[in-house]
Image (tube, rainbow, N blue to C red; front, side, top):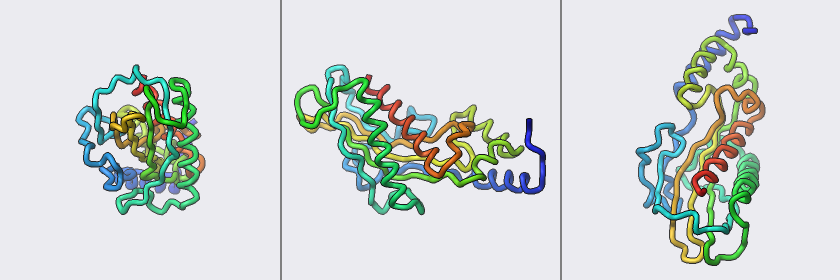
Length: 220
């Protein structure tokens, strides 16, 4: 049943639309990432989820093992964490380490030492946006917020007041240290993923889940 229209709800909806115009931060070619010079604008990306990319046309089928380095938290001046606390950054990096490792374990044997047929994955958390409490959930049901979020759902875009996560992926041949692929990604939940609007880090964690699934699909 639609929520009743009240002055506070209309005010919140207007605020949602105003903030939606700003959106969360757009990824950049982070100057402190080793592969930054090789990254190019990804013309094939229409969603904005992978705006920069480098690919060497590697044959992933020849790799059966992978080393997953500890997730780094980016410290460069072009980082995009806003006012996020160090504790929240550490929590997201730990969650990213666990989720990416779990997903990739279904495809690769996890190892700790370089060798033949082995990849090395380096993940760098470069930015994140926390979800504002209460208002994020409310914006899914108010009139103006509902219209906007409906449009964004159809486009595969971000919802109003939604948290997001931004990170860099660099994949090397572990034996030769050759860079095989790299990209910068921004991930966020579907606008009507209501559970993702509860808790400041919930949306960022859903974005990490999506990112892990996307990488696994890339390496099949």
